[in-house]
Image (cartoon, rainbow, N blue to C red):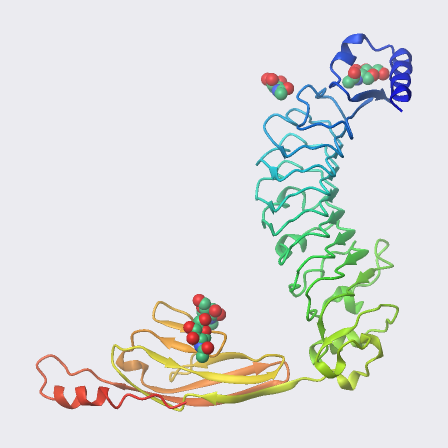
Length: 402
Ligand SMILES: *[C@@H]1O[C@H](CO)[C@@H](O)[C@H](O)[C@H]1NC(C)=O
Ligand SMILES: *[C@@H]1O[C@H](CO)[C@@H](O)[C@H](O)[C@H]1NC(C)=O
Ligand SMILES: *[C@@H]1O[C@H](CO)[C@@H](O)[C@H](O)[C@H]1NC(C)=O
Ligand SMILES: *[C@@H]1O[C@H](CO)[C@@H](O)[C@H](O)[C@H]1NC(C)=O
């Protein structure tokens, strides 16, 4: 094999009439070819521990796969403004220093698969203004910065982040990838797809979300076929198998699509578990409207003390609980109040005007339910006032009725 490369090298040299000087610029153990006026530096599987520093900066293709490189940065790729193709697959890279690829303005394809990356920081991929293929599957990614893809949002065609440990992906940037053709996010821990992210990805032809933790999917024009087929996406391949789909009324829209060649199964509710999504009749995709099971009825609190109002609801899907104040406003979080998703409303330091009837509203896709809670604020005795004993006694009456 080496002999073959040597012969190839020699024949290339003699054909192109290159001087020996050019060969000396080729990193030791690597093979450098100047074919069709484009220089390739081939250093795959050479036992390298780092990127050779004497790579010819005019190289167009640089292959460094199957080595033992642990990090990239510094001057590794400085001045390689003509580099089009960079392969770093199957090394042990755990660190990309910010701006490592800052000069690679011509790079179209970056392979980083099979490394040990855990994080993609905001400036790790800065400078790749013409990137079309970013292949970063089989790493250990847990976090990808929202800004990581900023420089190639409009050029990227192919993004592969499959086989990582991602719970979240930056949907904010993905939804702006106007040229995206293939998106592989399979085999991660993703539990959420933002609504409408695929709405403007007109060129998307392949989306793989297999084996994640999705319980539901938001309605999206991509799935419903509302996007009229364009020359690019006449055939859209969608894969959602291996997710713990919760087959309730929220997924009815998906069930209504005429498909059936897929192998998705439901994980919950229990009576639909393990059944094929497409074999379940539409009527069985049901929801339960909220039912408030427990709530505070009446609460007496001394002015200035903390008041905790509670409201519990069940339903399918899990209801969201809001509180409406006596002056008919939805209670938001503030320095004085916290409205938790479990239905607890905390007023840290009560004032006289907090007094009144609060409404707890539980909402889900199937409906809503309400309950009323009376909050009684016992005014503090005013300085110099005479009724302090009576008010103080009231403190002991302060009781919470659940
Ligand atoms: C490759 O060969 C061409 C001539 O065929 C020459 O002009 C060019 O400088 C060479 N490139 C490198 C990097 O040696
Ligand atoms: C990059 O180019 C600059 C300007 O031509 C030069 O000063 C510098 O030494 C080069 N760096 C490397 C690592 O080639
Ligand atoms: C208020 O903040 C808590 C956590 O600090 C959060 O869980 C809750 O969703 C917030 N409520 C609203 C209404 O934003
Ligand atoms: C609701 O959540 C808040 C914040 O996580 C917590 O302090 C409170 O104890 C919870 N309430 C109940 C009833 O579980």
